Length: 314
Ligand code: NDP
Image (cartoon, rainbow, N blue to C red; front, side, top):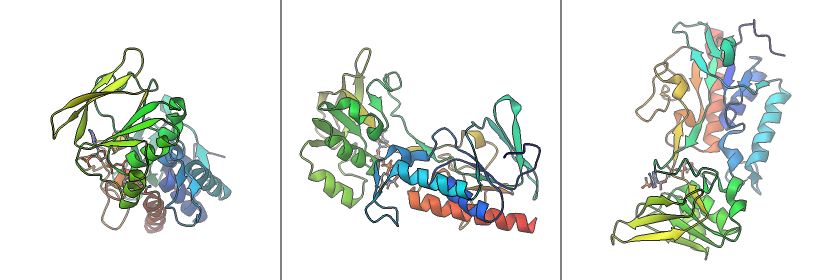
């Protein structure tokens, strides 16, 4: 049970691999963590199908199932899980100081330590009609929305691991998948490139940029421009899956913590310590480089250990 008048040792913001791992470690260290699940319970893995590269699952594991297991494990050690949105934070500058996280109606919780594991969100292209057609053909998640385009033609934008995973998944449901890549090479891993090159109904357009999103009430097509031969073409599609990377979820922490130019939380090298005492960051929110489920989990563990040490020294 949550006692709102008590000053807590550990509040965790976010419920991806970093958040849950931090909770498991903090709970086992008797820090009685409270975890706010955030906007996307379970984090980004809940929008992938099979996770093949998380150690310990020799046959792979469904992303939702993996996160559900992490949640149960955190609960087994009595982590309190809260389904409310944080609207503001107030971080103390002092060592041993008390921090506050606010929910709606100024309701707040005080804690000596906070672990930020709010992850990142997919980026928009920034084009006309992109937001208007969200849910009306435009999507960020093939596993969530691919079914609506059964036996139809769709396009995926991007050349990284996410785009190739999405294209591979959609190729099993849709008639044709057009993969639009802005450079003349992929950024994705070699293994995924090999897999995609063997799929007959994935058509790859390198050196291509999307110049127009077409349709009136819902998505009907896109126009793409080939930057090499300068030719434009129209592709009629019912689904457009955008997979062009992510931005860190750090809006709440702007002007409260040191962020880099892309908005990632800056942590001390080799640790999860931010510039404020008692505030730690783990997972994608502080990692523009690796961004893997396993590295997120690893930094979640580090954050709980860093916090435990911090509390002992206060
Ligand atoms: P990435 O940042 O790796 O790739 C983004 C892709 O989108 C790049 O090809 C980039 O092109 C392209 N892009 C960016 N902006 C635009 C734009 N405005 N218009 C068109 N194209 C654009 O993001 P991902 O989400 O693919 O991957 C993120 C991380 O997650 C990576 O570390 C990846 O390894 C990991 N991941 C791992 C998976 C796995 O292991 N199975 C699955 C999914 C993700 P350019 O190259 O020109 O910049």
